[in-house]
Length: 139
Image (cartoon, rainbow, N blue to C red; front, side, top):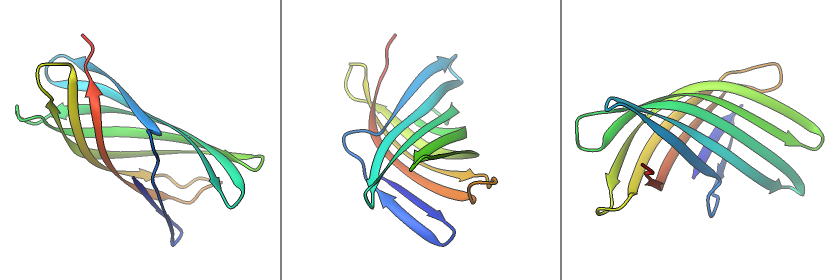
């Protein structure tokens, strides 16, 4: 689920099965580098738009309970009706990752907020993100 607010207008969108996925690599025991990748094709008011996003970030574990803090940068690209725009931003979040049994699958819960920066084409945008998902660790 994503909630966007910009210029007094808001939009809530749900996507199934998954419009986003995350690829990560551990950096020792103190952090992991994880990039969130977004690919959405949305049809709204008989117009099709494509959104691509890349949010590279670093997750820092907090203790040994599975909690982590996340710092991230953001880039999004959108194309619709012959026009295209891109925008940069930054943000952070807090999450929880817990192994499900002895296998490679973990449950992930995360909340985050990103601030996209105003540019010539787009107003600033605040995005609040809630993630419930699964992680697979490949070793």
